[in-house]
Length: 71
Image 1 (tube, rainbow, N blue to C red):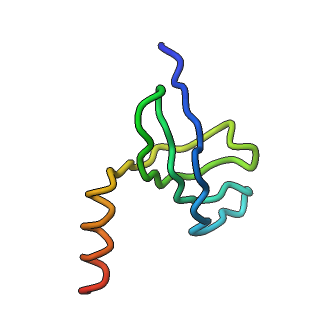
Image 2 (cartoon, one colour; image 1 turned 90 degrees about the vertical axis):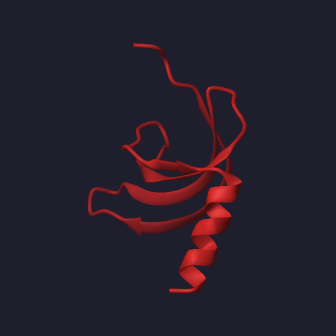
């Protein structure tokens, strides 16, 4: 299995924390040296291990924000 490279370009915030110490975060992450995307997933405290998550482009994030404002 190929190694996945990632760099957390900007930490935006913590959405919640699990009893085991993992935190659900929203960050701007560059995956495999590509342009950064908004990323929501659980991370261990050292950002070495992660859960499955979701990535959103800038356009998708703007649509999500608009949808939530109109909720």
